[in-house]
Image (tube, rainbow, N blue to C red; front, top):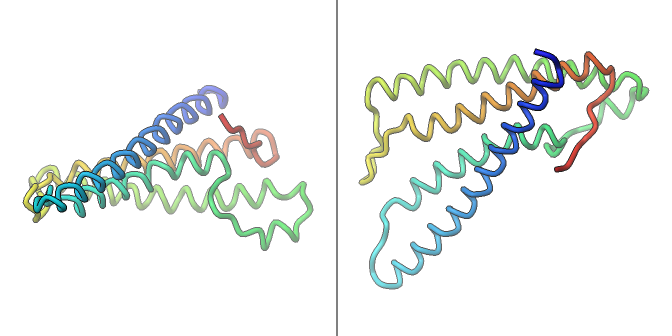
Length: 169
């Protein structure tokens, strides 16, 4: 696959995941407001903590690739500030490669865990008895998109020999 094609695919997937994360923020707000109104009436959904927890985990992981692509993650420049600018891409490549290896390893074991939850029919211990493979799968999608974004970043760094330009769309 040419670099431009895989970069475009990664950007579109990250836009989609970013949009889903934003919708989940709206869901969280709505669920909290609903719970407040219900509790004023002596009722409850009984699943606020559980569902909002799943949503927060999903938001976090779906937003990682999106944030990385836009250089919006927290970055400590202690090393890059001491290097000439022409070497910044090398440092970025090393950090991206190490991150790719670590998150690929985490993704692999998270995949095994998600598959185990699916096969065993594991559910939450709450009244909702949520099948755990559902929220686990959303985290896995976020991890996969982060790995794809890191891979694309490494390709861009090697092909251009400079840190990718941030495009806000």
